[in-house]
Length: 186
Image: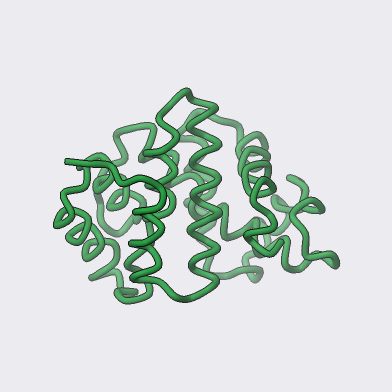
């Protein structure tokens, strides 16, 4: 079993995903996962690749019956490490795959939050991540009409499972995303 390098993961992602918003989401989650790998002293390559690939099958298989199960099948067919496959499966609540490792809990914790932070940045007059603050993210988190597709329950449950304060977690993810703001167009 192997862990793909970043280039291999990017190639696989772009083989299955052409939608710019989905590609940017993958980049945001990758950045957040790499950030947390450094915070936790974990394997930054593995964590980054997990973030990059977590939704790679979504564009072709968007239904809960298929995503991320079809992706897991593809990853296994490529002989990718089971830790990567299980993390991808566990990020989706509907799979009922337990999140037993810090890797799995972190992916779950950053996924929806990256989407919310992106949405908050896009409604700022500047449309820039540098103008996004924890306070503004929390305000929009409470506004259920804003970015309706973002699962608030996941955002609140994620940092709790990591034993991290919500404000600190939001700050970590904003910081990670700011590091690639140009790639994200924010």
